[in-house]
View 1 (cartoon, rainbow, N blue to C red):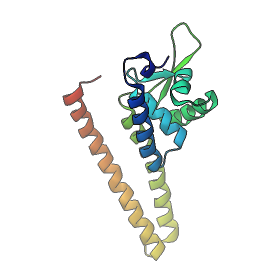
View 2: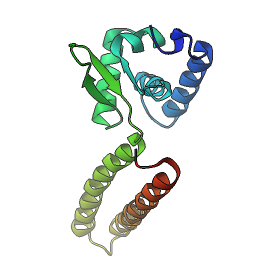
View 3: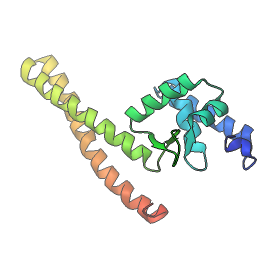
View 4: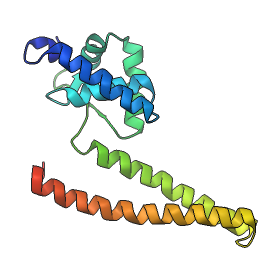
Length: 165
């Protein structure tokens, strides 16, 4: 039995939140099933659910859960853990999932910066295309620095308001 169905919370309210937040994630570009699974995990009291619990709550197949979790794990948004004494896995969202997701994007950003630098060199900094690519590179360089500073400020803010847990 899922948490929502265990009587601790209103299952309808939980479902409405999950679907609403998942729709926002889909609108931002996430695939529908991973968005629903992520929202379900985020809204669970423990932050962790089994495949069966996710399937029951979302009314989806084990294969759909598996594909969604695989995607979310690749994005560093959830982790897998074994239940003690069992072969069953639980899927967990952590309080730092946003930090992990942004940090993962930062690695992509670094690769883009490298490719853009190469593009400026190959096309020539004085050509129209080279200038456009150089401006794109400057934007990503700027964002890279801002993300670092922002994450430092976030850690201090989080510690102040939520502790170090």
